[in-house]
Length: 324
Image (cartoon, rainbow, N blue to C red; front, side, top):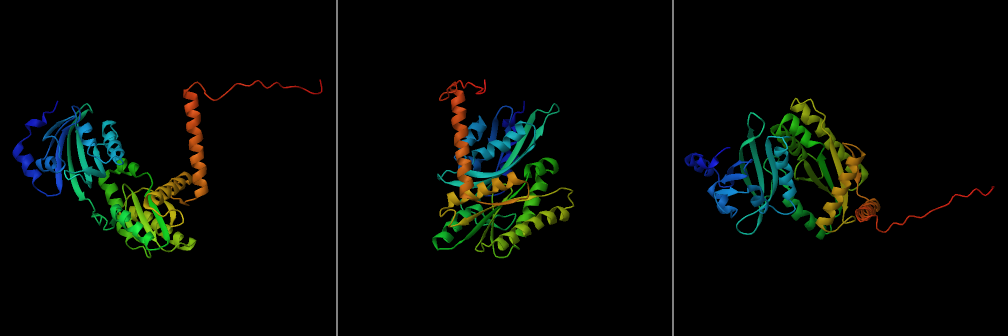
């Protein structure tokens, strides 16, 4: 097994001081044992420089709504589907505030394919990072601040949520560096969209806010993004088909608060993907209610089956031939 406790402290400490908002750590994933830079121990109020049961300890510092992001991404390494770790989520600092961090790392595997040394970095993006550094777009945090302000001032418009289809497949085949560049180029192209404010979301998602609600206006924005999805692979000399699906929700018609509006546009995106990659769908309250009722019925049936079909009764229905 790897003994990371004996890593040259001079090198580790030197690297730890290279940036005020960058933290480094190394881990033996097989033993779930890790070493963290002193700035990270201090800023995130960790129990010490050396930590056992790392996964359990660190997950406690991640915002409950974001824990699945970390667990799913790191899970791909344990499953042998990837050697890279790359995701963004909120982590609790020593001041009791959640800050956004970009966590990246790579694992070296042993000759037999088992997990070897994992080396990772964590960049502090801040509590209220205004701009996404790679794309220059507003961040998701700004969307959460600006959209409620727009609605409270009486603005009417639409939120378009774009999502790169099968982004993980691109990362798996071409690597995370290529996937990151694809997103960076898409984000930079979003700045050229007319009549919209663009935001970088988590993963492969981009949000656009517009006050133009006509079918023609929304179709124009949607087609511009589809054009970008063709241009980016061509510019990068990639032989891939890049598709982008889109969900649309209107404010204040579909919702007047951010959480509900965001849930509605996410639902619209989900419906678009069900139609097919590269599709667009608008939120429908009626369709949403039908989906919720269907889900509730499925849960009732599942609970009944789990309890010996409680609530059901077997009824004998005789079949009679009236002519005989």
